[in-house]
Image (cartoon, rainbow, N blue to C red; front, top):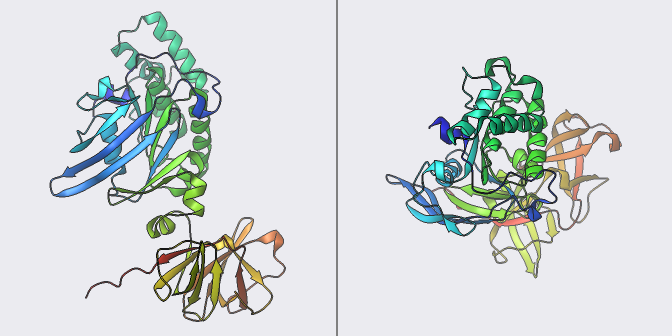
Length: 390
């Protein structure tokens, strides 16, 4: 991959707006349309008929496990791969066939790709010099970019003299200096430790909002996607399983894959007993019967999986209708919360999250507990997966 492509290219538009308002209203952003994108590597279908409409100034996350096609899709947008089928459009104009240096795309990679022999200022100037900018203008842009990423005192340092977070800021400054129409972030936080990762996620999200630039983030980290993105496209085996706001993805997963991949959930096997408009009653294999507000294509009598997230279960005083008896197997304090793993009658594992400050008593392995849903909308019902063929 060329250094010039890494540095990004300048669009014909003006500089990103400083202090922009809400993302959707930002004049600096550009719309991005992926229309029926497919790509094959030999016999392998890596991306399968992906269609996404991304609004100007949005921050979109492409989320999924390794091999789901998200990085291939990013490279197609950037122009490093020519897709087998479909079209990439910016503001309605197709980019198909255009090389990376004509697409107006800036990219920040996981390893930052800074030139080790160049100072911070020289790294930022690289793309500007390639465009033939006047030297005085380049100097002013360098100063502006360093101020934007709060690195004004580091202009003369080499990359090896910077921390990982500082290198990431410079990589971002170099990318934004050439005024790209879109910003692509390819697993940009993977090399950072947990605390620094959170700080940089907040900082980049704030910078993105300030600049109003349309941004695509590729990640396998669900928490990163949920916290940063305006919308998330969850990919599996090259296809989009769901494209929606983070709260929609988490609270109302469209498929079993999204439900299991995003966040932590309890999956309890059972049989659909009753079904009405937006409401289901499931007889679980553990003997309990639970009713919730959920839609499913399954019919009464079908085998199903009842899904409820750990924070959507609460401890209650005793047995009764809609209550799951269970025995504690493990107790795991996690800062302000405690996670309990328990087993219900059929041996299924159930995780429960409780605020330590609100706990009325401490629990120990072997204790009998009783669990209920926090609300009737706290679950989802999916068709049971087919058993593996022999």
